[in-house]
Length: 640
Image 1 (cartoon, helix red, strand yellow):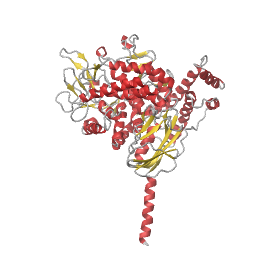
Image 2: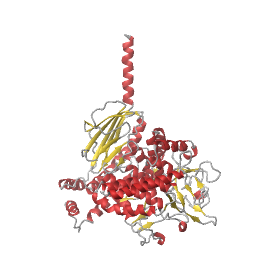
Image 3: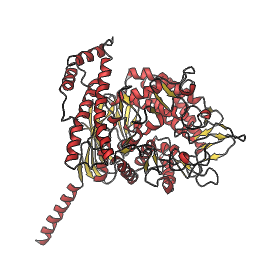
Image 4: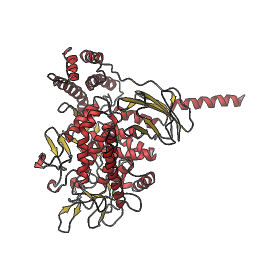
């Protein structure tokens, strides 16, 4: 009798424990590692109006109906946006897709053509992108430091090429592909102009790298600076070519796809020459053979992280080399003193400035932390299954998120804000780790005709439900996983799906329903019915906007950018009251007085800017000859 009582008590304890280890959030739910699930949910909350955390809507600007780097940074940077944009793209919905494209259009509408003069009178070569741009303003070279000796934005161009190609692959908009593809081809040709045919490496001068102007290029015997072979340029360009090849296929030009495939093969062949015996990449090699970035060397003996973690994140290297790179990074504690990755350790000894002041180690581009890099580092962690590293990174991020101090770069090697005298801080870069945590779950490898999912689910999570869809053209994909280990079964909308292996699932575009609920069983676990998609609704309703959305829906435009923008305005307005209620209830901890006032004001300002931008955009349709825009304007005018 006692053993029966013991068994019942034991089963009750197990049941209680299982329940305690379950999590159900707005965006993620599951069983197992509750901390990981909670951090995932908070990560997704940062990309919509939220009463507790700074979020993407706060970076909206009506000036170009898009996103801005930050309240104190009124342009759109390539390097800074890289990690956040790449990671969030599968999840991004309207109106954010339009906002992001309008921001990237600042680069592509003003890209170098050999004639246009940008800031400082610089005339960018054809195909050259930029450091940063805003309407009527563009920097074709990095704009800080000894700008007169800076090279053109070489690796900036490669990263911009990658981001725009990824956006096109996900959206699959034929008109957009026709518009942007010639621009992307010009970018690729510009980078090709720096290929050395003798070794298939790419030459870049001072500040031609991504995290410029830390890189000085080749210091010649006479003390002047010239070009050297830059590893980061090869890595970023190879990753960009992988996506450009698929865009060419999607656009129906297989011949050009083959040309870029050959270029990719040659660039990979060259990149091997920048690899150390330990498997990681050096930073650069001078034309005279001097190597920069061999860790522990007497001269230039630092490790450069961005080409290394990017090579893992973007699958430029195979699994074996990826593990070697990670082992090297993990073996150098100085690279992650506060759990965030630094661009280098120890200090550079080859900048064109001395490592002091702003250029001192741990402050800016020399050992300061950049969250755009952390977002890509998290992708690398996920690919290799280093989930504790991801949790440590996110815990560090939350220190800043909880205080409304989402600043970038971070000084003190990633432990202090760059602008401490501001009452609050916000930069687009800082969302990259959160976005990386989400993208890292499945990687999302977009191809011309298919989407490859590579699950990276922590072994401590035995069920994971992603309640928001990811995009594949106009199709929506909801994901849920059961168990852990190798993939053992897959179903789509309850029907078995055969195209999977132990590590990945292939979803063909043509064979996928418009709304696909994908259930993934691992390690032989059995799946259960997939939950219905979570509908995003708001408790606060603007009658005029609600009526506008209803009218748009009746006109068959309910899924349009304009309708989505109107819904976002409603969300941003509604979250103001919810935030105040949570503060009064003690659910949100108050900040210091000036910071609290600035934080509260940021919510009101966000709602106003979003509303102003929507009105400005639709009013611009007044005299449009476009039939769709005319219909949108008619729906708008009915209530204004």
